[in-house]
Image 1 (spheres, one colour):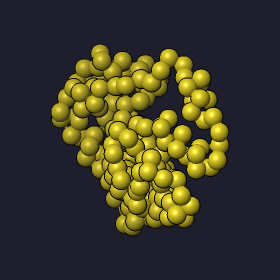
Image 2 (image 1 turned 30 degrees about the vertical axis):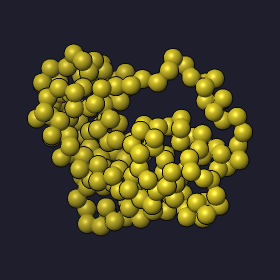
Image 3 (image 1 turned 90 degrees about the horizontal axis):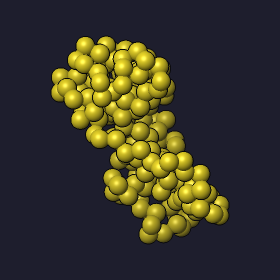
Length: 171
C-alpha cells in the first residue's frame, strides 16, 4: 500500500516536463497538476474497482472485499522491513543481505506531501479528490494486524492477514 497523495507526487519525467520540478511549480502549475485525472484521482482505488470518482454505488465495499482477500499487505513506507519479514515467513534465506546489496544510492525520504505542495488550498483539494483512495488505504492499514517481531507462528499465517510497519506501528 502507498499513501495516495505520496503516490501522485511520485510522478515521473513526464510529470516534471509538463508542470516543472515540484520545488519550482507555481500555483497555476499545481492546479493544473491537481486537475489532471490520469495522475490525481484515486489511482489504486480505481485499479481495484474501475471507479475513478469513488462515487459508484457499492464500489468501496467491493474494494474492501478485494483487500480482505489479500494474504499480505506491505506498506511502501517500510518496504525493506516488510520484505524481510515476508521472506522469513516464506522460508527464504539471506533476503536482508540481498536487499542491502541491491541498494543504489539509498532510500529517498521526502518531506510530507503537504509541505511539498506548499499550497493548503491545493492540498485540501487533492485530499477531497482522493477521498475514496485515502479511505481504502486507511482500511487496509487497519485490517487484522499483528507485529511479526514477536513471533512467526503458523497461527499468524492461518489468520490470513499480515501487516507490519515499524514506522507507523500498526498492530
